[in-house]
Length: 180
Image (cartoon, rainbow, N blue to C red):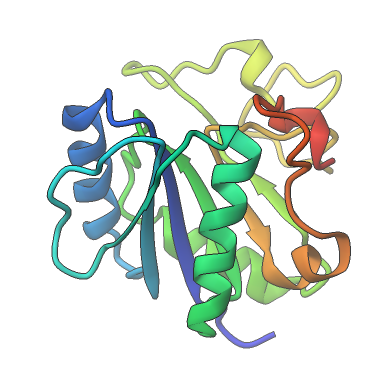
């Protein structure tokens, strides 16, 4: 696969505007810019968004699954995204090379479907429950993903075309198991 084009999808209920602004700033600071960025207001109005960030306001809260499917459909309609990167509105990309590393991983293996991010605290520590592998004490050790984190992950559009989107019957989905 050639260098994949990343689309960032953020779902918000409008109750964390400071965190959302910080997240979008961290996305803008990536060494590999995202091709598209969309923020979905899930039953809430959106704050003013930076130039180049698309906003979609939903009249009603469709839940995590429904809101993420709206973001996926928006990015799909643009026609220029190969990997959807779901980020929680209170997340933060603390390294400027996250998007470049993610793109390299998908470029190296066209069979790759889901890549889970590592969640770390301000000291760089990762709680065991945030290590997306079974029987792994080292969060930096690579391995086949058996679960994945909802707050930060990449989804191949190719995979999404094959399996469909998020199961909308789950208003609040535990991402770690519902798409795996």
